[in-house]
Length: 114
Image 1 (cartoon, rainbow, N blue to C red):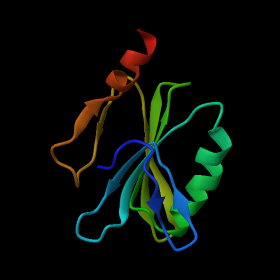
Image 2: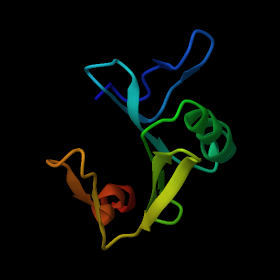
Image 3: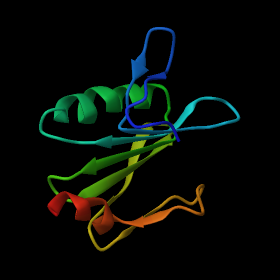
């Protein structure tokens, strides 16, 4: 896990700054990007960065949207990023390839309100 908003080089001429990044230690490649969507950066995160992530075949993308208190979970496929689910407050965010990780979606947004 890189520090928040760390620059990640995807190629010689493309770099992104996901809100959170998980890089595979074996390859040094971005494996999971977490984008926290706000009204200020809605288009860059949900359109531009998402397209870049599709082009590099990013294995996992999580779009955390505090406006709706949900998380969109995307997985790479041969056809690009595929929406695997939209999780809301009462659901648990997990990743089978990270068996130790799990967090209640409601917990992600609890600090925001108070």
